Length: 115
Length: 118
Image (cartoon, rainbow over all chains, first blue to last red; front, side, top):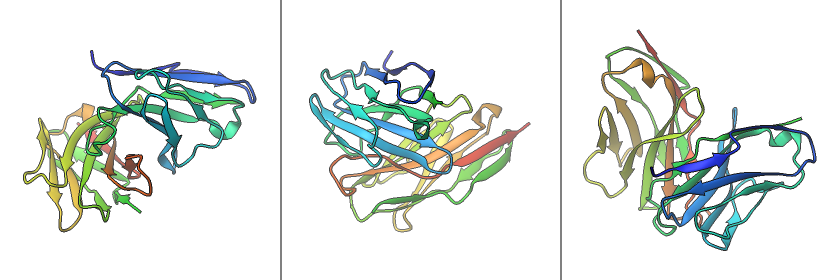
């Protein structure tokens, strides 16, 4: 089944404890992206990747890191999480990086709470 | 800068009736894609329908259709024969070739919460 998977789905952690949210897609998609969703602010892009080893900042990259060592995986790293990073996180992917009309498919989301 | 506006924070519809969710957009790029996503209370983001700016016909996917009025920059979602399972948040989104960078990001509206009454 073609899909985007994220793990964990739910996470409660404490301030400063490094964590990684994994994202994997099995559709051979070039483009991958991370979004966060917050009440009143909607969905905002954190980072994106056009292909392996090609990543760049989105609108709200502060406090996050990403890597794209393999085409299928795009982990989101929070080196020192803070309470303002409590949010619902989505990973998304689309087929061709250059085709802006390609549909982005989303993972199931990760609910992160930072205490 | 591109912008998506959904003016209806909430909508109610009776089961089996049709409902239209409004979306207007703003972009200076002649080539863009418009998308609708559904987010049920469980939280996942489900792709519903896509309309390209050069598409001559309105997109349809089962009970979903997109009323695309390019001159008005409008891309309304029509759900026919509403079902209880359609109760969810609906997001309109746009992706164009140039949004201040080359990242082809999706820009989302604030969403419309649809409630289907039995």
